[in-house]
Length: 322
Image (cartoon, rainbow, N blue to C red; front, side, top):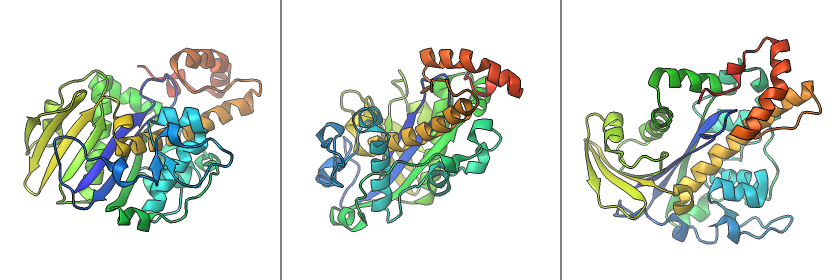
């Protein structure tokens, strides 16, 4: 069967894009069960928890920390996120992304040119991925464990698109759900006919996803499944495949595939934020960069307001409405 993990980075901040991430793997001798299949057990020694990876400099090539992206970022820095994404690329027999433009070209349905109209995103190749110890090819090591890495995808949504969709649909949770569905369907379409276990980090406070799934798959039969604590599980029966969904509280910690999706999304977002900060600090060298979260984002907006005015850029190009 396939196992897909889906998560986002940047849902809460005031500035910068929200990025949805997803990964797809094929698992041999597996079928959907009452709980997500434990991918960590299959890949033990190749990947580990963020806190289990040594903090030596340089770190060993293996195991690679794959976990909640916030924990990986806090313990291992931006290079830790890059290591996780690079390890997935190595397992899929691809080179790691060199920069943000390359990441989009090979691991997204969007391209750098889609963001060319945003002043601070004009040169995404300048957002380089940090160097880190390279694992070497991992495809054979994964296959020996009955695992094939198939797809890693990111969907970055800039502020103007986000604000426009909020005006259209009215709810942050609904807009996030639409982006997640777009990415999920894109991956499923590339792997037709295979049963899949789909693991999704819980969307805010939502506790009922049946109507959401019926909207994505209008011609499918959807019903609830027994679920573990902190999970909401559903069967989706299509004419040519069966999908089992698990929406998980803390999914990026509970499921390896969701952690990988979380790390891919956060790496892409941080590279976008690096370009945003570079554009403004080039015009005001004493400006302190921002990660875009609400309190510091407000400080940043106050300080860059004269720069926006001088360039004739409306604040709505950088600030989210919600």
